[in-house]
Structures are given as C-alpha cells and as structure tokens.
Amino acid sequence: MQDFSQALAVAFSMILSMDDALMRIVGLSLRVSLSAVAVATLIGLPLGAAVAALSFPGRRAVAVALNTMMGLPPVVVGLVVYLLLSRSGPFGVLGLLFTPTAMIVAQTVMIVPIVASLSRQTVEDLLVEYDDLLRVTGASPIRRLTTLLAEARWSLVTTVLAGFGRASAEVGAVMIVGGNIEHVTRVMTTAIALETSKGDLPMALGLGLVLMTLSLAVNLAASLLKETAARPA
Image 1: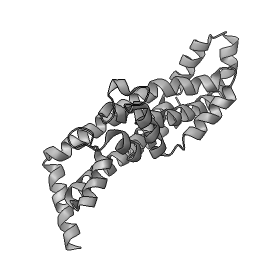
Image 2: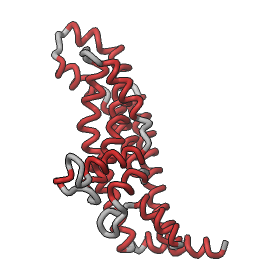
Image 3: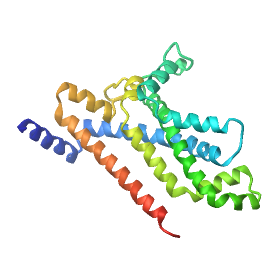
Image 4: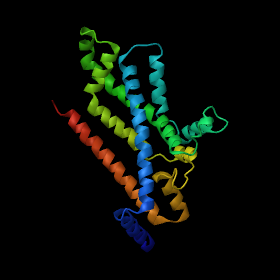
C-alpha cells in the first residue's frame, strides 16, 4: 500500500510538473486520436446521413454492415491494416507501417462505423419531423443531407465525442500497426501497458490519470451537449 501511495504521489508530481516524457506521449496520443476522429467525421457523418435519408440499391445492406462493424475487434482491425501496409501488402510501398499515420488509419477504420451508425440513427429520427417538408420543397439529395446534418448538429457533436472516446482508449490495433516505438509511436494506452509490465508504476499511473481525465471530460461534454440539444429553441 505504501508503494502504491508513493507511486501515486510521484505520478501527480509528474503531471503537475509536466514531465517531458509524459507530455510527449500525451501529445502524440492526442494528435493521433484527433486526426483519426477528424477523418472519420468527414467520412462517417455524410455516410450515415446518406444511408438514413437517401434511397439507393443496397441501402439496407450498408446499414447492417455499419452496425456489424461497430463491434469489430481492435486486434483484427490492427491485423488487417498491418497486412495492407506491410512490405508485401498493396500499400507497403508507402512505408507507413510503424508510423503515427498507420495508427491514424487503424483508428479511423474503427471509428467510421461508430460515427456513421450513430449519425444514421440521429438523422432517421430527425426525418420523422422533416421528411414531408423536404419533399414538398423539392430539396435535392445534397440539400436534404446538408439540412438534416445542420439540424442535428448538437447530437452529431455527441457522436463525434463518442468516436474520440473510442479512439483515445484503443490499444490493440495501435500496438500492432505502431509497434509502440519510444518517441515515435508510443501513445498513452500502449505506454500504460508497457510501463506496468516494467514495474514503472508512477509513469503508468500518471498516464492513466490523464487518460481518465480525458474520458471524464468527453463524457461530461457529451452530457452537456445532450442537455443543450434537448432544450426547446
């Protein structure tokens, strides 16, 4: 118990003093996760809205596929991305394996189904109110999508936050494609696993505290946005 208390005290000290090693890991983690969320948002929001609001062949199959992919095991995603980016893979010539870019790709693959599925459900619920109006005004497909996405903006921000929460907590996929290389691809989740195995509890606890704080902040922001969206205009 004494060792844990001492390790926790050192962890707090590292956070307050903004320890260089700890901040480097946190910074890379945020860069990778935020980049993945940005790309997934650009893909997932229009995709989810299109599946909800437009009619096209295979629409139901796409919806089912998105829902199924929400539960993809991270290690499987990591393995697939690894094979695609390896030297013998189709994209091996790009030399992206064991780089932050490979980690962003893996996280994006995991987040897109989440963002798309949640946004699809949000837009479908909104269509109950807006479908007749959009039909009467003769809105084009693009106009339908932009209108629905704009009206659902608060709920969709919550969806994006959910994607960020998923990305920031990921360890399996980023470990496989990133390699957990010090100063290159070591992020909070992979560093926690490594430092715990090495017995460096202060660093592991410090990173764990930062990760928990980020998770709490994301959940709090999501709750506040839900309350904002629920208030009458």
